Length: 103
Image 1 (cartoon, one colour):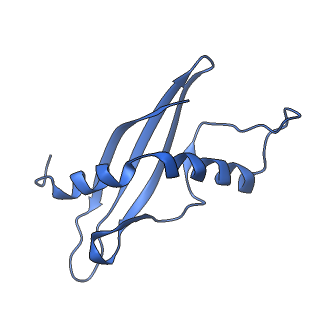
Image 2 (cartoon, one colour; image 1 turned 180 degrees about the vertical axis):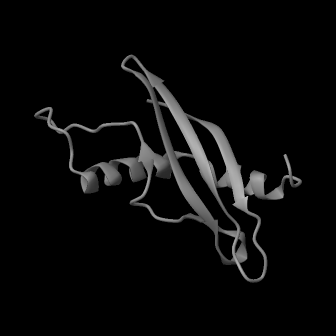
Image 3 (cartoon, rainbow, N blue to C red; image 1 turned 90 degrees about the horizontal axis):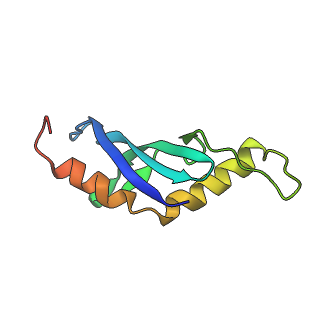
């Protein structure tokens, strides 16, 4: 399944006291239907961005093992993080951070 960027929002603009924070949302289509995955991000020192909590992704995806059984939450989180790692989400966060307020 190929995922495409749907939206990235800056929820906290950030300043010297608090880092910028927000959310990003991605979606994909397959023969089984639409899927989405979203997570919170935070701006780190030197302008780098990071996931707030790699275990706290929100998705409607369900992962199965070879026997067709649903994977445990930890195993699903590992699969989701593998997907996120392939996406250019940091670029979209950087663009959102550089956009004028209100856009």
